[in-house]
Image (cartoon, rainbow, N blue to C red; front, side, top):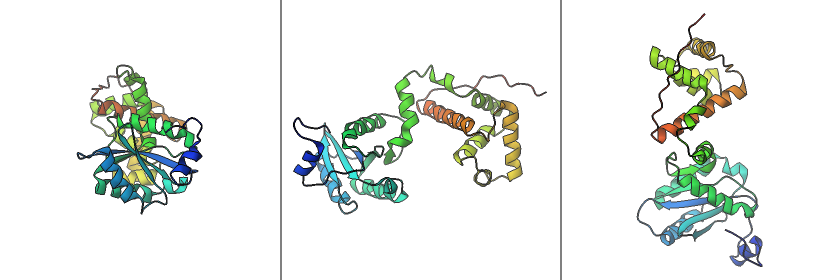
Length: 249
């Protein structure tokens, strides 16, 4: 994880008869069954070796970790995720994957991020990418559940209250619209509604909130609020939208 006194990372890799990687990810490996770290290390070494050109699997502070050299292109391919999923089923473990990085000196930072991600209550599934947990990691560092609800965008708070009072579906519509990268056709298809119905709902949202749903920065802020709301829900915070609904002129 760190350079030895008088020895560089390149020296350490040379001692193991492996090449110093120029692009990589660090993976925290957690057993789901009663497996000792050394046993899990051996199983993962056996399973990963045929699938990747070079793999280093070791234990650090009683935790099994793996270093996999991988290009950014390969990291972003769905095949990488599928391969890791297969490995977790065979090894009966969970893998927490660090952000892709290129400097070996960043390995300890990658390990720290994996450790903090493992402590979150928001991670689901056998393979968790730290970059997908960015908002949750940032929110967890705030560590004030009584303050965080204040940062839910007022537009989202108003829409939550409006849906509750009028039995409408503006919030789910907005959520799908943002997840579909504001693509009308894709959103309508996922909601199983006619495109004109979707346009009417979005117009209604704009009328109620004043938000321009064609503006990238506005959509980013609203999407961030959905992330925050999900974080609070997963931490069992009971949020009640109590904003009064403005009357229409």
